[in-house]
Amino acid sequence: MTEHRHAHDHSASGDPTDFWEEKYAGASGIWSGEPNRALVDEATDLAPGHALDLGCGEGGDALWLAARGWTVTGLDLSPTALGRADAAARAARLDDRTHWLVADLADLATWPDDAPYDLVIGCFLQSPLEFPRAAVLRRAATLVAPGGRLLVVAHAAPPPWSDVPADRHDEFPTVERELADLALDDGWQIEVAEVRERDATGPDGQRGHLLDTVVRARRR
Ligand SMILES: C[S@@+](CC[C@H](N)C(=O)[O-])C[C@H]1O[C@@H](n2cnc3c(N)ncnc32)[C@H](O)[C@@H]1O
Image 1 (cartoon, rainbow, N blue to C red):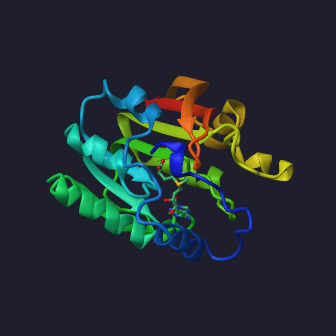
Image 2 (image 1 turned 30 degrees about the vertical axis):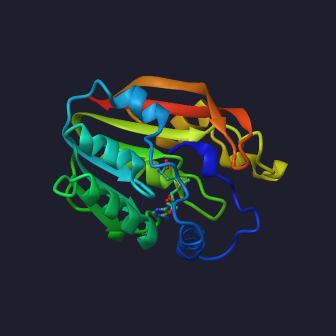
């Protein structure tokens, strides 16, 4: 994903499935199809294995991993987004290594049952609607195999072109907040915990800088 199609809808309220479905259905593709920069930075050197992408959207990250030899389960609330991910996987002949699951992360019963994973990623698992982010991140950590990694990437601040009201700034986790939410114990080594700046293009072509909170941890 890059941010050029990204814009929060701050009038959002109500059911998360309706919200995200409407967002995806309202455009032919809301993300770029490219993998997230932090994923490329953090996963390029990892040996391929079994991966889980939480809130995978249209599958840019999952497909990048699959192209590098990973078998990937991509999970999202939105059937429309996953339909696009599946079509892209077929077009790239990566459908034998990708599996798409419509599930609600807020409902633990719908999570996949083929853990553990060598890599679990949650990139921009941020929603203007109610979302149990800390519980989701903690559950995600339980699905990582010994020696495997958990990668969590989040907007550390609203994009410069966004009109996010000041009272919504707690949607943008600091490193400290992310680590507190994850609550990883001694069975984990924190390999990366930092905020990174990157260039991005806004919905109307504006250039700007984005800040990402990046946490990568390895299960011992
Ligand atoms: C900001 S997008 C990020 C998409 C993708 N990870 C990326 O980096 O491009 C958030 C994604 O999380 C999904 N999502 C939001 N709430 C969810 C939930 N409760 N369960 C599963 N997916 C959810 C949305 O449908 C959306 O695709």
